[in-house]
Amino acid sequence: MQLKLSWAKTAAIVAGLNVAAPQAMSFAAEPTAPAKRVVAAPTDVVLTSAGELRGRVITAEGQAVDGAAVSLQQNGKTVGRATTTESGDFRLENVRGGVYQVSAGQSSRVVRAWTEESAPPAARPTTTLVQGNLVRGQDEWDYFETDEMVIAGIATAALIVGIIALVEANDNNSRPASN
Image (cartoon, rainbow, N blue to C red; front, side, top):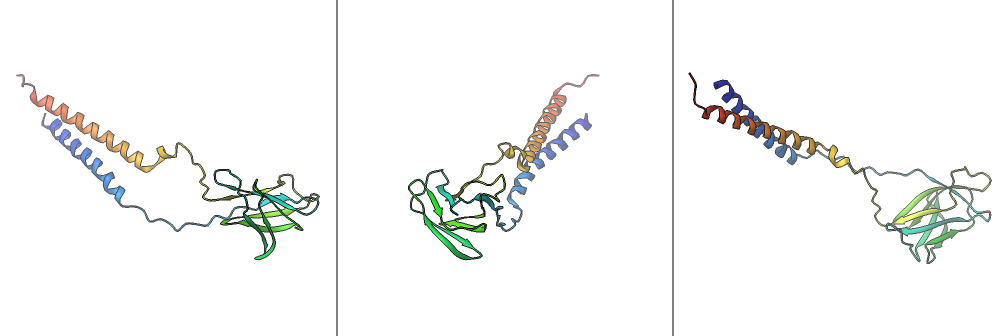
């Protein structure tokens, strides 16, 4: 009987430590790495037969941006300017095939402009610029894969085991000894 009581006390102490340890660890945040600038791959766009690069400027909510100033740059030099219409559309004229940066406000995108004859099959007829903060969705189950959830589960299980062990030890101590 002394062995069960000792085991129960040990289990309760371990459970208490497991409850306290994750809380202490959560205050010690890991150092974060500096944010990396992500450069998106160029978008392939087909020029019209008249040499126009067409596109659209929208907000993060998908609404058209009227009157946005759009600039086209190649090798750091501005080679074209346009203003969006009420529907957010723009046309940059006299564009030749090549790699360009299209900008409107804080938004910019690298495009590879192709003539109709040389465009790859995946090339699009227009490009789209999104103004404002665009937040991409994430996996809905990602929350359940975090370390905090695992630690909380282990701590809860240890606490339950400790409580059961104490209840069992108290039940064994309260029974009268039989001869």
